[in-house]
Image 1 (cartoon, one colour):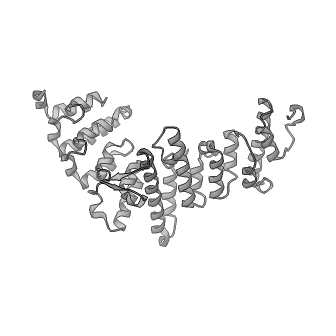
Image 2 (cartoon, one colour; image 1 turned 180 degrees about the vertical axis):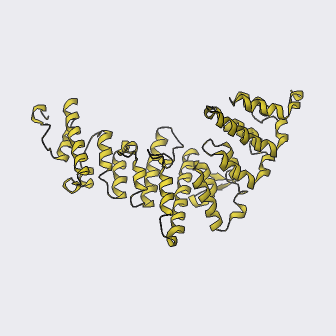
Image 3 (cartoon, helix red, strand yellow; image 1 turned 90 degrees about the horizontal axis):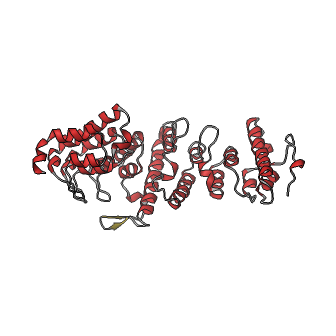
Length: 366
């Protein structure tokens, strides 16, 4: 056991011994705190003073048997990782490092997408974090690809930005790599969600490339510029004509966009203009698009500002304008008309009243 009185605050204690001793279960909490603190200060000081070469390599540190290193230590170690493989092995050995942030607010996945951008390591880290999310019962995190740092940038944003810094000759290849990552992530998400099997119209989906590109981006809830990239990629591959009408898991792109709270109204409307007839079609659950939107795209969490309510009115109004007959049809699950369904789902009063006012004759059917 390390004695407290033998530890000087000014002593330049060797980094690895300090961390190993801090991990020793025989030490009291105060001694551990001092040792971890000295290790953290040493890493910070030497990295700041450009003395990284005097520190042990990340490989040497990973070979040590450290027990439960604090998140502050893991954050400092992130700054020592020079290669993608180092970052991956760090979070693989210490899963809590997935949530460790650098001083700039970057998570390991952000760093992977800004260093050498090796997609094979990015894909591995995304999968590792998705498995952690599944274990914790929190599906839908998509491995952190949509998490924003303090500058408001997600890993996907960083990868997308790097494409346009590349030479024109490699731009198409970079786009294909990013699209493949999105397909791979959506594939793993659907596998986890469906207990390992993805069945589309009787066909077992075995490869990420079998998921339509636009569907994959919408399933993930990607930001608008990534959705635009996916649509552009479809045009590059020459299959733009059917991209808006192709079904995957029983849904065309606009149906996914309509029910996802992560997809903006602008993205939905751009897809809706390409395939408006879908508003007049019943889905596999027996509902019109209007019913499905009211039930699954609940605006209760987004009605804090007047602007969001106006956006909801425009969003719902676009569907009603294309399929007014849906206002006098009950949904398949609760047998409620749209205005009553909206009231039960907690939509703003303006939406409920607007649905009723547009076709008040629905009251005669009740």
